[in-house]
Length: 230
View 1 (cartoon, one colour):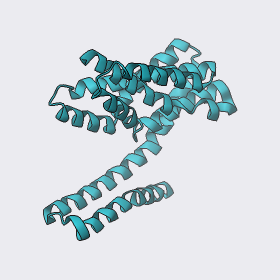
View 2: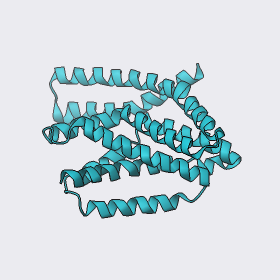
View 3: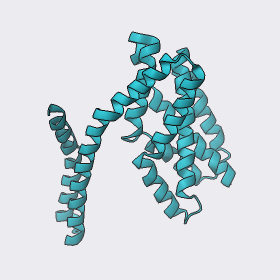
View 4: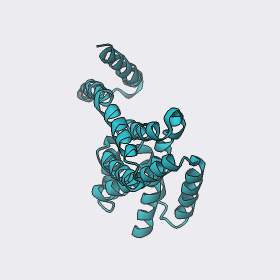
């Protein structure tokens, strides 16, 4: 019951500021039609209810399951299995990410179908999956995340020089949308689960950084897509 109350307050305080600002603008500057204003208020209500249910689901299901899967994978002591399922889980959770679908829809509309939704979603998902696999490798061998970050961003700068300019901003937005409400909690829980078995008390040091790595993968994959399209 306490968890439900905290979730309701958290969502309320998240949505309230943007609602208040828009209402102030409505009655001072923009004066939207009444029908549009009512649609906005209904949308705010639906978003609030959806976020409450989503966050309750994350806390009740996604986080515990992510940690359990990570723990079970690390107990196999098989590097190939850990990396393989890290890649697969990274891909499938990204395909289900709402933010990725919003971006792919907008890019499809702006490009008049030249960059289709399905191609962009798969490019982003594969990028996340590959880098989640690399993150699993880092956790197993416990080497510094700085090496992967430096190599990843170095590769981004090189690819950006050979990619059409229209793909560069899309690629960085693709990295941003993977830090959405579905991908982040699951991937973080997965990493902490793997690290807790392999490194015990140092799990907090080894298990974090997955989101930083996962956001590099889509940038690289979309830049490569740009090179192909270009």
